[in-house]
Length: 102
Image (tube, rainbow, N blue to C red; front, top):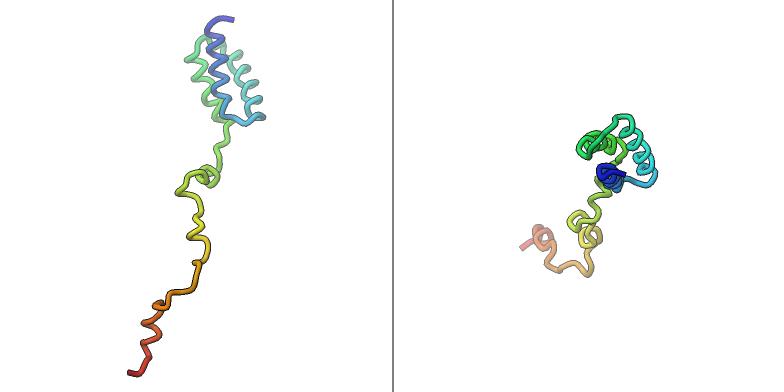
């Protein structure tokens, strides 16, 4: 193998790393077929040929799934659950005293 062949194989490996296994195997077969049909000689030409092909095999994750890991996107237990303890005795004092005869 020539050095450019090794570089192209490394490029194919890097582009397929973000794909799921079934997509990866389909991409590897399609990439090698596209390179053989185009007769690419260098890494730059192979990159320009393979990047659009790789994008066609990649499915982006759902936005809701991607944001669950960050702390500021997680559901807070303080907001989700009711308050703990008895209500404050001063709570609602204005409403209780509004109709008081005085």
